[in-house]
Image: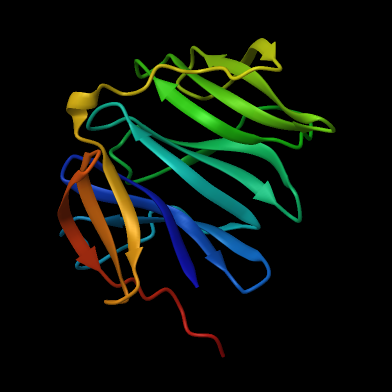
Length: 198
């Protein structure tokens, strides 16, 4: 089954991220793109085996990022997918060179080159957070802070009318909505057919 976790919009395109699962394991992380409000979809990025894709952020019409992590079997080796052509192509960039068991809790870019992310690192007595910074648009990352308390990144401005995606069980569709709080307005509703089990 397909679980869509996040949606963004850029240059008139919808970009959705999510994961293809069986009942017991995550098979692939998946990126979907639609130029017609969800009527038809393409996959601009090859499916990433044993990975989970979660957050998406677009800074402008061209530059965007998707967070991901390997999940075979535990969450490790976090990475970002980077686009500079409105989501038509993506490049996978690791956060660290060495293996690390962690997930990306937050991501924020304030320019095409400068961004920050927070890693959630499991510890025997809870979660440790690590703040990383990039000056290269996500090509490389540098550790800036380690904390046993919550690190809070700046969030996108509220006037950007955030999008969310959710599954609607009664209709068997995914619904994209724009808004905040209790005021969400439907942008698109669609069914995505990924594959048939043989």
